[in-house]
Image (cartoon, rainbow, N blue to C red; front, top):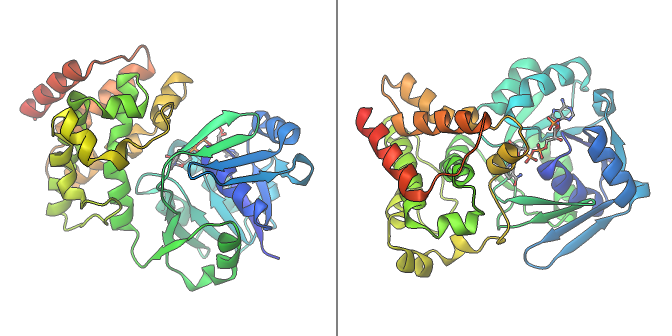
Length: 338
Ligand SMILES: NC(=O)c1ccc[n+]([C@@H]2O[C@H](COP(=O)([O-])OP(=O)(O)OC[C@H]3O[C@@H](n4cnc5c(N)ncnc54)[C@H](OP(=O)(O)O)[C@@H]3O)[C@@H](O)[C@H]2O)c1
């Protein structure tokens, strides 16, 4: 049986790994001691917003805080935050089996490249998780929105496809992940807006002023992507290029037309909001930062996304509670300065 290591047992790692284990795969988790204690005490309970439910009993969970636990893995799913990728890559370089397949199931654009550079000769694939996972405590992780994991197409994945199928996942494979990653990143531009709002996603997205902030950030990114000839994949019922217009609609009309976008667990916040609340470094440099770097490569500027980065950095150091109107006014001024 294939051995699968989850490198970075947090929200995404515990959810993906837990479902794979519940489906019968041999899974080992590598993560922090607190998560280990939680899983050893409670096991895992994975729930899906459609009502499905999986359990992994505590006595069957293999958890380690030591990177060396990944040495025997045939497949390694990297699920650390982007700021931890370089360290995870260095740790894996020292011990991953030469024929191990590594998948980055992280947000952003460049994590798989960081892993690839540190792991020459290994098969490193870009992946993407489109749904939100809420960590509820006591080993409970809840998939709060729709979607299936997506991954770069590779023949080397064939031996593991049945593990994903038995876990109830429909693993979507793509010859080129860049359009998929950018499409997700466009949606993730809301993470900063949501973190600055101090509100759950559902309440934030119900307010036009916050949606106009997101529309500004997306419009800026879409123009750069067009210039770079990158066509974002279609992850939503509407093409990515139509979403800013939808976001700018008045509240009542938006609520009618975008029912799916608002069909989120009422308590869910973006992971950037959770990071801010927990005093952790956010992924803003790997999300809005990618837009700024793309602009630089094209000899352009991305003032809205650059400003969102500075506001998040300020929030990392203190309080963040922007009203929609105040944030929109600030971003518009920033865009004007750009
Ligand atoms: N959460 C979501 O709903 C969601 C949805 C889609 C995509 N994503 C993406 O998935 C990735 C993971 O996000 P997440 O929310 O699951 O993060 P997370 O909950 O912070 O989980 C990552 C875990 O890995 C640990 N870790 C970091 N470096 C490690 C290392 N070298 N060895 C062992 N453990 C290590 C972290 O500990 P420390 O905190 O001590 O560093 C943390 O416990 C991110 O790129 C995120 O953007 C998340």
